[in-house]
Length: 632
Figure (cartoon, rainbow, N blue to C red):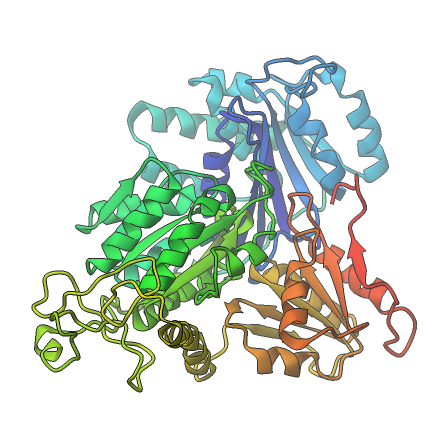
């Protein structure tokens, strides 16, 4: 990160408008021609507390949150319940200032609201500012807001001061305000924005080195999170039914889907629990709808049995599992990648499912569409596995990326005419689960089709669905279900790989990662290559079935491969070792599990530790963990 790249963090209390203000400012930066990327952090307590959103803006495409940040707008927590340092949560009024200082880069800029944060309490700030060459601008933002309206408008005043200190024109900000507001509220906010801007220009000697990049987009951009990508991918895949129960961070997908389907003639059902949600989705799919359900870790646990039901009855089903820090309730609003083994194996018996772990907004869209295509073609569950980082990060994406034709096709569904020629038992039931033909996927009949009647049960069954315990039939039915995964593997091998390579193909040291850590690993590799360090990476998003040959080829010839993931138990490393055998000293791990995503510099430092000496010699350490108690 350089000082000519803006990484702006706005911090305050829950209820201070941090999220909405950051989104509007980010959109203004995008309309200013910049590529943008956001990262949010907020407490899981119902009573709220210190929260912040970080916005990275550059003239180049961005794939991660960056190293630290260089501009802080600290509003203070106007809802701080207890300003005492001895309180359980500390002095909440000043937390948005002091709890963010450890991440602020040298030479950074600080604006803080003296209307909430008492200047007499900032002696520590003055000392640290001198040590780190920080440029501090105290402003009574509340007073500016009160001249024209309510206290909450102080965030608008803060944006005005920010624009002045960056020499950013107000036009894109005012344009967004005109689109979002009207009447007296609009006029008041425009006045507050202008007053903050003019005050900063008149009263401050602006001498910092943080600048706003200049750029023009070649095409129109949209501002989306991974939750939008999943939702729009599902809708464009023909999904018209969603069922769920709210649980962070899955709630974002459920909310977006519910809102969009209402205008499309679809159905969205909020039910009493996750068991009901998954069973209702299976029922909707059985009846002929393209259906989606999902949850986060704890809620997804309740869905385990129904996943097995979908596998046994060969009912198409697409599910979303949004990871967060566990186990149990864990840290509900913090990110982690510790549900991989759970999602791959949950439910009893031999599994037949597909799992995708997209790494960015584009991949969430594409792989959700692919999940629907394969689930309905091969009549099996497909799971989209992502995490709180992807659902909370918004990025600029070219609008043209989403210009795709919708796909309402229900996959391998038969017709009444075709049913007349398909096998039936002596009682007239359609042999939906036949195993004596060459097709690993039997055509699926829908309720109401003449000649399509069959039984669907969670028990092992004969071809017509009736319960069976015959040993030879059991072997045939299990082989039939498991074989579908191999057929999917063969089909996907003919498609372009969703896994992405970055770096020097001849590098002796490699990084292997999955899911949401794709962008940060690839940025670290690009920066290392620019410094003359030979390293490469493979970011995996097709988790089940894995592309074995591709991963084996990537690992061939390297002396050390670090598996980068956000969990404590090396889950993806374990999957690789299970699939390919123990690589001995070849595979190592770089782990982070404090609830915060990796930063590029952390990856780069791990590579430096691994490359111990000259000529590509590697360290004997197999597992690197970020130090306990460290801010990162």
